[in-house]
Image 1 (tube, rainbow, N blue to C red):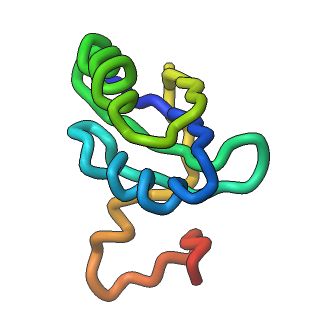
Image 2 (image 1 turned 135 degrees about the vertical axis):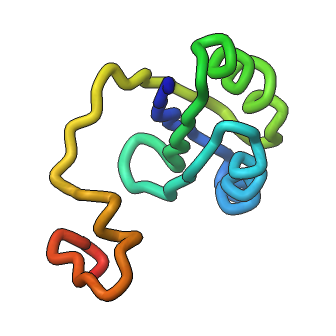
Length: 99
């Protein structure tokens, strides 16, 4: 599995609509609106580097109003957050930042 984080700048009126259009791209699992140098961060999870290349160079560039992207490819994942706890019924998740 290849995981990548794609930082995106967009024209101001296109930020919200573009985020929804980006979510429709096969391989994009999440899109975050963020503060800082970028407007959006998209998380891509694909099986092969070739799929990521297509996603970035063919699919993403079709979205109107995107002005700049920068892609970071993940080598490893380190996490204290246990995803299996999210899916366990009746178990409180102490590490859940939403609580």
